[in-house]
Image (cartoon, rainbow, N blue to C red; front, side, top):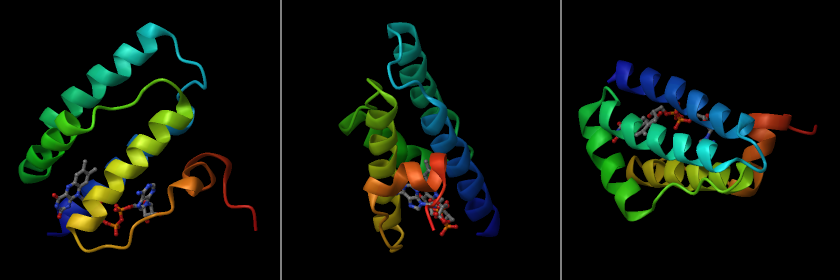
Length: 106
Ligand code: FAD
């Protein structure tokens, strides 16, 4: 449905933007905050079937919060998992910073 898609696009924008502004060298508190946030996000995401699958994914592949690049790549892989599930093309994760942080070069 259209609202699940619009919610999805807006939410990926928020999540990838959080990755883009996450510190290159986060403190232990910042790392714990991000882990808590992702766990709670997965519970509260208001598309319940999506949330159920995402909670399972997070259990299997724990969010990597050791640095901006680690989290950005983890999130990109998580997004690709959803892309695969929905039959969408996967994204080249070496380009996540260009898409979400620094902007495309051309
Ligand atoms: P989106 O997938 O919303 O992506 C937005 C933009 O992000 C793209 O245009 C592209 O530029 C960029 N992008 C694409 N892939 C990546 C990547 N791997 N890394 C970085 N950037 C990328 N929908 C369902 O129908 N069923 C579900 O179970 C479901 N689960 C979801 C779980 C979560 C946690 C979220 C946030 C969304 C979920 N959605 C689900 C919504 C779905 O993922 C899409 O957001 C929605 O279908 C709209 O897709 P879109 O083609 O506009 O691009």
